[in-house]
Structures are given as structure tokens and as C-alpha cells.
Image 1: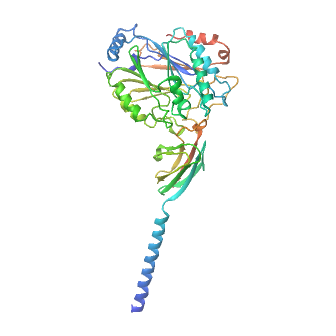
Image 2: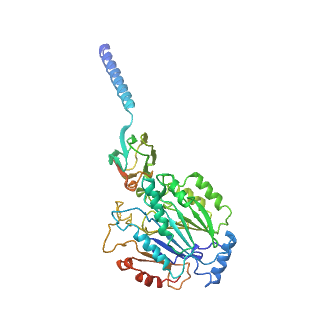
Image 3: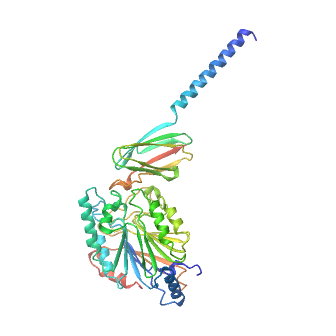
Length: 331
Length: 122
């Protein structure tokens, strides 16, 4: 099969709920015969017919964090859950890319934070929620408690013809995946054709985004080398509490906003310090990120436009504003 | 030149050679400059050091509590400082600049802000 742009199988139509990103893998299969054929080809590679679906990425809720800078606790997380449930089309899947909880050395307190995270996340009316740990979940006990609550910290699964890979780059305390997981990854991918659609989700970026702020994975290059033969790879990650999009060697890397507070652009500020809390705009910098096709009429592989819409106090108080925003989606 | 003068010159040369050997020996015995850095949640002490370009130094890293990391990719430093122990890192910086060095072994709530600055000057 000829080389294809991965956007043919995954159009990012989405809605970052502060917070996260709603991805749509559906858009073209019905509308374009060419894309439909592409999806069918993908299905052959992954052993399952590819069909349209949507999913979300949420990240960095830090349940248990009580500020400063953000005194809102779990309110942004709960707000995001309401927004997910208000979507006009129910997503198939939610990916949570780490730092579900804020760390504490008191095991009972950490366990209660895990329970609180699960209580809130289970309010989401979605069939499937998948997680990876962040360093605040797993860094102090090598992931033991995380695994007790949520199972293995790295794994893979197939959904509607797309292969999802969860990678753990936090449980070794250092920002690394480690040799065992690298060997597993290579074995896991071996059955796939090089054109198979693969979505990797993890906590830390797999490239040197800002090592001085610990925004990197020390053996990220090794991970990308394992993924290098595959033509349609997308990486979703959290940790950095801000939007970010990088493309390297045909792989697209997307960082998600957090559900607790935001970091500034490391290229514009020397000090790693969250944006201060603004009581008049409690979700400032935790807004919605819309990523959609250009309305230029060009083929959908040519351009993607990005629009950020901040949550407002009114939205914080109720969902009327959110519903208005969601009406504009073409899911 | 008289024989007596020749003896004086030879004696002086011998003396200079001996002194040179002593100085060289002492320099070798002293070795690179030692810089001690202590890690304790959630700071390094001192928080800033200055090194000279081309000067060999030994960074003696010590943890006073839990396991910490000491990471600065551009200086090719990637160490783990085990709890209560110390580790030496040999370093000869070759490029002037300011290098933010971080703890990259998760150590608790403020781990993300545990760093120090290594300044390298001409």
C-alpha cells in the first residue's frame, strides 16, 4: 500500500476540555471512497475492520492537589466529565495520560485519592476508559498502588482497527521506559504491517521538549526507533500541562492541557512556574482546544487548523455555554 | 667558563629540575578540584556553582535523605544518588554557558522544581 498520511485514519476534530482532546477517527470513511478503502486496508493489517469512532484524551487531574496556585481541587476534572457527557456523540473511548492523582507519602491518603479519581472518572458515560500512570501516581512506589487500582501500567489493545499502545515512562522513578518495556514493545508491534495505524499514549513526551523542566524521556529515542518502521504513528502525552504539537520523522506528538493548572511556554519563560490562579477566570489556560480540518475545501490531508477556546466563569457555573460550543462541532 | 662556575650552573639546573618535579608531583597528588553538592528534598546545595572551561573537576554528589537524580544532558551527566550515599562525577566542561541541572529521580511533591545551576566560564 502506498504511503499515506495518518490523518486519513485519524482526523483530529477535537475538543480539549481543558484538559484533553477529543479525537475523531471517523470523518472520511463515509464521505470519501478513497478514505473508505484506506480504512479497509488498515483493517486487514490490524485484524479488525476499521470503522469510524471518536475518543478523548484527558490528562493530569492531580486529584488531591490543593494548591496554590489552583484552589479548585477536582472542579476542572468534574467539569470535564460533564462536558464529555454533554457531547452530542458519545465517544468510544477515553485515554487518561497520567497524573491521575497527586502524590503523597501517606499510603492511605494516596489510596483515597485513587478512589476519588475513579469515582469521578466513572461518571463519564463512555464504554471504555484506559489509563497510564504519571510520576505523581507511580514515582514513589514503582507503580505498586497504581497497578493495584488500575492494572498493568503498560499494555496494548486494538479498537476498530487501530492499535493502541500504553507506555509507562514513570514507574522506574527516572523518566524512562526501560529495556524490558522496549523489548515488549518490539514484540507487541511485530504482528503489524508497517502501514498499520498506531496510537501510543504515555505520560511524558517521548522527545526532548524541555529537559531542564524534566519534559523528556531519557530513552525516548529508543522508543521512537522501535516505532520508526511504522508509517502511521501518533503519540499522545500529558505531563506538560499545556497544548503542544510536534512532528518529527512523520510521527505526530500531541501534548494535552491539564485539569488542574497550566504551565507557560518554556520557550518564553525561564522559570518553571504555573500560571497564577485567576479567581475571575478560574479555568484560564484550561480551555477547549479545537483541532479540525481547514474549511479551505482542499483535501483533508492538506491542512489542519487549531482553535483554542477558554472555559469561562459562566461555563464553570453551568453547561449552557458548553452546549453552545459543542453545537459547533462537526463530529 | 671556570670549573667552579660550571658547577654552580649545574647545581642550579639540578635544583630547578628537582623543584619542578616536586611541584608536578604535588599537582598530581591534588588532582582535579573537588566540588561537593548535597541533595535533599527538594533542593541542591549549593544551588549554583561556577566552573572554568577546560578545568577538570570532580562533583561529589551526596544525598541526605532519599534517592535523587542528577541530570544535565548537555554536560553528559546522568547520575543516580542513592539515599544516604555519595557518588563522584568527573567533569571537564568544554563549552561556556549556564546549565540547569535537575533531579530526575522522582522524590516527592516538589520534585519538579528541584534543580541547580552550573555556570561554565572562560
